[in-house]
Length: 153
Image 1 (spheres, rainbow, N blue to C red):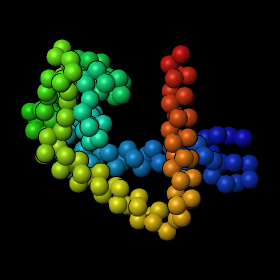
Image 2: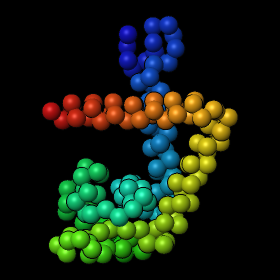
Image 3: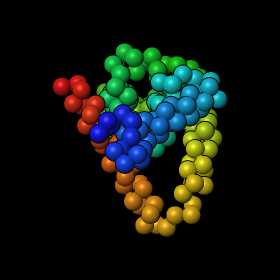
């Protein structure tokens, strides 16, 4: 079987569909970044922070960037009014990065649109079907992470 094309029975392979999803998400991310007036790396940082504060180290680790590169991202987003840096309440040597009200509004606008489109498509599915879909997407995410780690080794 050729994993880059189709299954032997002529149906589309899981790899092909996963690549299509990745390409669609890349197009969405590009449109969202343009709408927000930022670059893709900055968008990905905002996406990480929409669920709560992170340290610069956590952001660097999750984005796969060096600490100096993350410092530049945080500087740009702070200057643009999207982020605020605060000393950690538990460790004064660390800082916490949070979205500002502007950052939360802008993130909610673009990511909310994606959420609405997904909900529209999944709205007719039963709770069981939705749970299987979410589990399958999570499995695909984990497979991509494993493949990424294998390539790095």
